[in-house]
Image 1 (cartoon, helix red, strand yellow):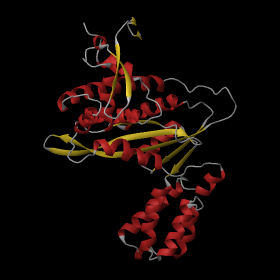
Image 2 (image 1 turned 180 degrees about the horizontal axis):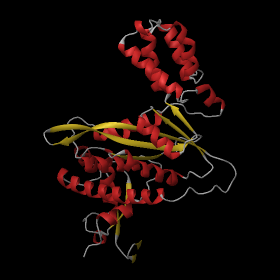
Image 3 (image 1 turned 135 degrees about the vertical axis):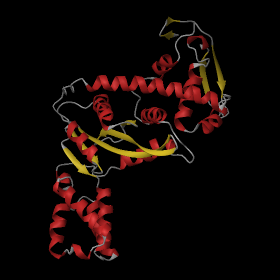
Image 4 (image 1 turned 180 degrees about the vertical axis):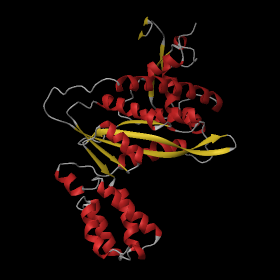
Length: 347
């Protein structure tokens, strides 16, 4: 067997899990200090990443891997910190490199979606809610090739990770980058820093504000449904819609939620983030941030916002990044490198 320490001759054996799968495992406990076989340790890390430690214990039992919750926590946290450190170092280094030139003249279209999700963190005297920032980038014509990055950190710390992710995904100099978000200020600043070709306001986000405004205007249900459907198809320009609406609009008769919705829509329309028919004519296929909304639920909330969970900030930061890599098309750092960094060779 080839390893980081040269060619080794080690015993191997096959075992069958309770699910009926055959698995070839190498008996190389001596390669690191964890005391676990490499394949078993890999399953431990996957189980800790997928579910809570209690659920991971039950999952590993199906593979006849008996481990206590406390031992699993120690192993999982060590591997998480190792993967976080290596991944952040790699992304920071990649962010300092210029985008490569594309050898072929054909430009590729990329979509990048950015959002935040609040998770409960333990603070002195109680619980505080901190924002985990997430980004996903994928080719517009192949959304299954997704690359994620997440972190409970400031926008200044998050920006280099996103810049590095662009290079990991394979974005080239002449490619077109399309940004989609909910219009938050920090995201708009990040999109400007990334140099996106078009920054689009999530059409579903716009539709919720439009619904509030239309209810305040006492529009009937069929008219509201028709207007919303036109918007979601990308056939409604928000600025033109507001211009058509303004002559008959009396803001004094609107309730407070409707006035706030109107102010938000007017601001976003002036930024030219809602010219959906023009975006559609330019060939842009994506005007909704469904990918990042799903990521907030699947990557972050499903693991970090479980009932009764209270995270310390370093642990939540590490787990968010590890989850993002787990659900990406391919992890930035291979597991073997993570393992050897977490558990050096035994003396």
